[in-house]
Structure formats: structure tokens, C-alpha cells
Amino acid sequence: MTRVDFYVLPDAEPDQRDIFACRLTDKAFRAGHRVYLHTPDQAAAERLDALLWSFRPQAFIPHGLVGSDSADRVAVGWHDEPGEYREVMINLSLQVPDFVGRFERVCEVVVQEPGVRDALRQSWKHYQHYGYPLQKQEL
Image (cartoon, rainbow, N blue to C red; front, top):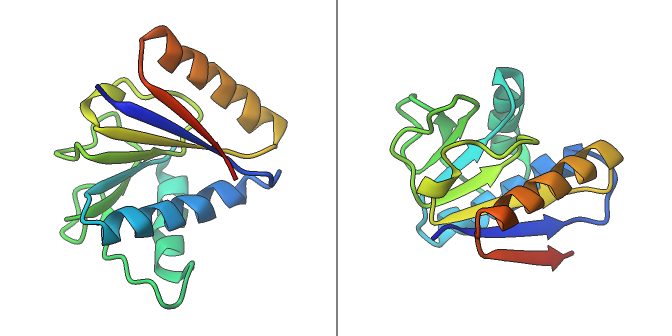
């Protein structure tokens, strides 16, 4: 069954979710995992795509938007279908996608901005209701 980890950041800035997602992606990529980053829309996916190239100068994470040739190990998407990705999903949408159960692991990133925090509380309840194993990590 899919394991769901909630990473709770002390920051209130929503942009910190994307920066932390880049750090998680870097760690998962270096560990040999395929990563799908799910965003709410195309504009957010394009911003995250650019951030993955620049968030840490010494990091190199080859990636691309879902469906592109460069999206072999790490893909950024916003659609209802993440392609053949099955290992790690980092969900930056404020809703639980229908396809969440196909992944081995899902990461949710919480910041202290009330809209984000409240939406992710609902996500926690959703996962809990469906019996997903949950972990919470305060950072």
C-alpha cells in the first residue's frame, strides 16, 4: 500500500513548498528513484521545472514536463495521468489526485499559510479514511 509522508515546514511562504519539493526530488533521484511532481496547473509545473534547474547550483536533476524526452527519471506534471511513474510522487496540488494509490510513496509538503495548511489537513483526513499509512515529519 502507498505510504504517505507529510513534511511540515515552519515557514508560512507557499514558495517554500516548491523549494522543499526540489530538495526531496534531489534526494530521491540520487537514491535511484523515479519521481513524479504533481502540480495544480501548467503554470505551476513550468515554474517548478525552471526551479529544479536553479534551486541548488551543485545539484543536477535531469527532468522535464510529463511526456517530454527529458522526463525519464523525474517528471513534472499537472494532468490527471502521470504516465508510467509509480515510485515517488510529490504532490504540490492542494487536492489528493485520483491516481495516488498507484505510487509506492507520496510526499505532501505543508507550510503554515492557512489556506495550504487547511487544505492539507483535509488531505490527511482523506488518506486516513482510506487506510493509507501516514507519517508526519515536523521540520
